[in-house]
Length: 555
Image (cartoon, one colour):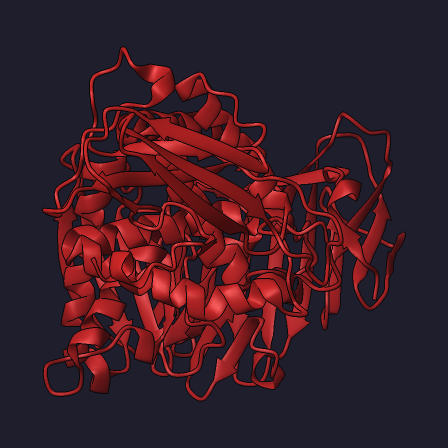
């Protein structure tokens, strides 16, 4: 197996700009016809097209309407010489969903067809430029037996439906937004539906539908309520409005992910979505609310703005983890939500960072991308966004995310694009902060304190180090935000005046920025012995040493 390295990234030689998919579902096989518009990447001189495929039976291949006799097929590729640009290709493949035990691509489980395309499942459906930086317009026609499969779903808006001979029927869906093929979805089955609606901030009415086995329908109401809360919150907090005529969720028993954010058609493993007063506890309801929000928020942080390559997974997952944590904080108790998120990080991600599978938030190489759906990419990636918000402040952070969405809408982006948006909106140089994306391990911050009562000066001395990890033998200093206060004997925060900033008005809480290996911060006019309150709200994913005074800790 070949190692894939970030430094070797190159854009595709050819782009598929639009594709019309035609699925004919039969009992023992499925025929897929993909008619695609192709254009050359003008930045290279390649004349050979190489499409990716796996476990496919090629039935027919046409170029500009003519059957091709000059192409080569192996276990994972379809290769041919490109005609004059642009051009059209039509590929018909035969696949066997009921034999697909990988549960990637299109598979059949009992009486249901479903898909899972992330990260590389689309190549199991047809030969394609199966990578996230190829964004195309998709339209989909599905044909199946009407009695067995009365519900036929795919991405986008419903365009047409009707009956066919021999008891079959069809539907046609069209997605008006560019997307990579990993966000494509298809579901076919005999499903019940819970329906509702939502009116967006521009007064557009969106049909909301949750499909599931009829026996689960009474357990979908909380998920529907959570979806509507998510849509309102994303408009109010991030200014993100939903963009299709409908939003659909499918809950199935057999799904190899917890949930998947396919554009306009989220698919869930049933236990992650279903609960009612008879079957669920408070924690179940909170978890469902959080995961519904997470997958919905991907509509912008992952779908409208997607990934250039799989090294950028945290661009969508870390950012969306941050967004769903903020949502849950607003829906419930912010303090308790932060405690729960940090407990999970410390219990799950800190050991990962210190163990044999330690890796940066943005890995430099992989053998298979499945290895990087990790706590580091998701939870630590989310903490990087928390730190950026802490450094910039909420108002500037919102301006930065608005800028990020505006500049990258309909594009495949990188973590560098995200940080650059933070820089442009704030006017700050975040070059040093970028190291968080590239360095593995959990930093340790040692703290010393000194108080001169006669001079009323209190000094905090920080020293940072990151232990060596299995994947990296050299470490560098990081840009660490420290939200802090000094507490007096009555438990109230004392006025903070840094020695270097005497002209500023006193504050009760400050953000210190530790950027060097060792750094001190002095505060003046401190009229009593203070107790330092450091890394408030867990302002950085670090371990702290030196605050071992039991009396202060109890205080």
